[in-house]
Structure formats: structure tokens, C-alpha cells
Length: 235
Image 1 (cartoon, rainbow, N blue to C red):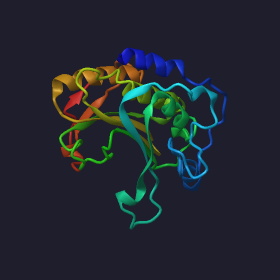
Image 2 (image 1 turned 90 degrees about the vertical axis):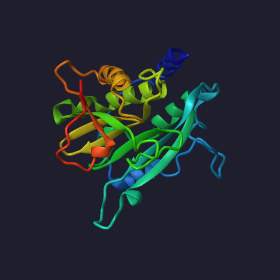
Image 3 (image 1 turned 45 degrees about the vertical axis):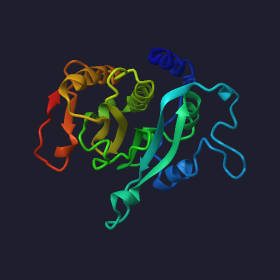
Image 4 (image 1 turned 90 degrees about the horizontal axis):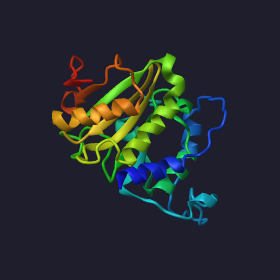
């Protein structure tokens, strides 16, 4: 069933277009994501309304919510001020409609983040579903940044298609961070159990198309505030 869903996702992959990537301002990103929904708005419109390709629905196993963290513009802004949900979806078609409606990672301003999390889990260490878990992560330096949009899409497809942890359901969400030093993609898990996490990490490394010499690292959320923390797993 999981493999069939992944094939359905890939079969609905929109055609590639040659585009010039220009970083958007915070205001532009906010405008593009403001009010995005798979439910009808006051005009009866949704992100699915203008496409002929979304008549059939392929349900996913979970509801997923896309979150956006905007860059801080003032010293007094808290994390909760910067983080907001964009929209939720439950089908393959809704995912593609949203994906085609929002800026790509390379278009986001510095210090922005996208988070895609299962059900009603918030992308915060303190969330009950995350508190006993951690994350696999890899930072792509500037030289490899041109491929970040494709790699982020691969990560999204693997997560919502549940091809990484189809047996253990370890995954809570996936995150991309946009920073001056490069882009970081992280896979958040519900536990720190090394046996299932090693399997998940190996598949995630393949999804990100990393070389054998590239080091994928796992950190427990409990060590998030420790600047000297070392990874508990490295692949």
C-alpha cells in the first residue's frame, strides 16, 4: 500500500520548467502563503479549484500540516510570533496543489523555515510527540544549494508517502532551514531508539542523495540547548 502511494505521488509530479530563482522578501512569502487552504474560502475557491487534474483523490495515511517560520524583524519577537501554520492536507492531490502554490526553499529569505508535520504535532521540541525524540539532519553548503528544491521535494514525498519508516512510524515531520551558511534538512522522530532510527537514517540518507563520505547526524531534542552536544548516531 505504501509503495502504491509513492508511485501515485511520483505519477502526479508536475513537469519541470526552466526558471530563474530570485529570493523573495518576507512580505512576498507571507502574501503567497496567506490564506492558502484546501478548504473553500469565502469565494468558494481552494488551491484545487483551478486544476482539472484533482478530480480524483488519493488519501494519505495521515493528515499533514505545513508550517512556515518567518525571519525575525525585531528583538522582542518570540518563536510563537514567527511560527504559523500555512495549511493542512490529507490527499496526494492536495499536496501537489499546495506545492505548486508556495515559494520553493531557494526563494525564501534567510532565516526562514518550512516544517511539514504529521497530524496536529507542532514543530517544537516541547511538543509531547517530539519531546522524547530527536532529528536526523544534514547541512548542504552553498556549492550544493542549487539542488535544494529537488532534495526538499524528495524528502517531502518520502515522508508523506511513508517510504522511509513504513513499519515503525518513527517520523513526526521534516524541516528545511534557510541560512547564510547553506540549507539544512532535518527529519524529526518520536523516539531515540537506535535500532529503528538507524534504518530510518539509512533510507533518509538515500533520499537526500548523499555520498558515503557525507555524514548524516542524529541529535536528541533533549540536547538541543547544549552547544557542545555531540550526535548520538552518525551515518
